[in-house]
Structures are given as structure tokens and as C-alpha cells.
Image 1 (cartoon, one colour):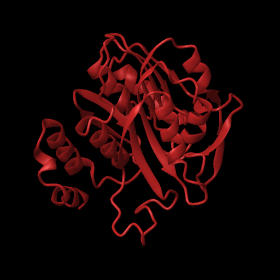
Image 2 (cartoon, rainbow, N blue to C red; image 1 turned 120 degrees about the vertical axis):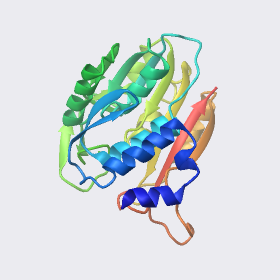
Image 3 (tube, rainbow, N blue to C red; image 1 turned 30 degrees about the vertical axis):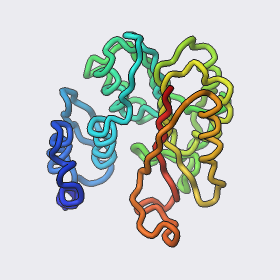
Length: 267
């Protein structure tokens, strides 16, 4: 049973806060549900339609237990760009932290975007604009593989679907001040950040989920250089636990990527 593996891996962590105890209960209830079987899940006072329970459980851990997206700003109506909003868990967290926040939620997968809209409506999460387009370097559209949950990627091996795109740089340059820029765009982040390298000076906080793929050059250094040149300090943690990394070059449970990192940029 998956929940037992989780409990015994991190026994202290699993009980130390109300959020972590709630996660434990969610794992107990949904941890063994068949993958990609839609469920309605109640959490933190919200009720969400969820297309894949396992993906949601790890989202809950990062967003509500670890609080990856918690940030400080002097603005009580902060502008937040949520690139890769998925089903809206991050939007719910942002709204819990800053109820008057004005959020633009970008989601490339049209089916997931519809679930996102439904979750926002059902939970009365207002002042949120949903843009069902891929975050990219132009507005000509892009092909990506739809995994059916939160793992859509331009580098996938399955059947590709072309979706509409928009250039993030244009949005950044037409928004005076951005309190938080969240980027979880499954491999497109390096190209997008390169394109936006001279358009980040008015961004207060940034989160980037970095992905590296075996057939592509690793460009972590490029991303960190862009952040540093824009005045950010940063913190990095790994999204994977890999033993013998000089020998074991694989990302356990993910044949597509060989590295995933969480990058937190602040001023």
C-alpha cells in the first residue's frame, strides 16, 4: 500500500503540521486509487475535481505542506502569473494567502483547463483569468504530449497535439509589477526564460521547476545566470532522491527526464 511507504519514509514529517496530517489522510483515502481515474476531493476547505489522484497528492504535498509558493509582498492586491496552473491547486493556495490577488492562470492542456475553470467556479475563486494556451516564446502554437494530468511536455514520446501558445515576454512587458511568477511548464522553462531574460526586473518572486532531458543539453547554469543578472538570489532543491548519482543517471519512475529541480528566486 502506497500510504504505508509514505508514512515509514518520513514519520516525523508526516505528523508535524495540520497540513501534513491532512496529506496523510488524503494518501490513506486516495493513495491506491487507479491512475487517471477522476475523483472529487475535499481539502483545505476546497472541493476539487481531480483527473489523477496521485498527481494531486504530490501537488498537495508541495503546495500546502511544503508551501513552495508562499511569498511576501507589500501589495495586498498582488499580481500573480501562474504558468502551468493545472487544475488550480496553486491558485487556491495563492488565494488563501492573498484573497485580493489578481491571478492569470495559464494552462496548455484544453481538457485540464476546463477542470481548472470548473474548480475555480465551484470554490468561488474570483479575480482569476484562465488562459488556455501554452507558455512559449511566440504565439504560433506548439506541439506537446498530453499525459492527462500534470505531466504534459513538449519533449514527450507519445502522440503530440498542437495547442495555442502565447509569448510570456509580451505579458511581462505589459504588466507594471509582478509579485509572483510561477513557472511549472514541463520542459519549456529554459527556452521561455531565455526569451524573457531582459524582462524580469519588475518581478518580485519567481519559482521555476527545471527539467533536464537525456537528449538535451543541461542548461541549469543558463537559468541561474538569468536570475542572477536580474538581481535574484536563489535557493534550489531536488525533486528526486537518487542514490549513487555518479553511477545512477536515471530519474526513478520517470523515463523521460534525468533531472528535476525546484528553483526559488527572491530579492
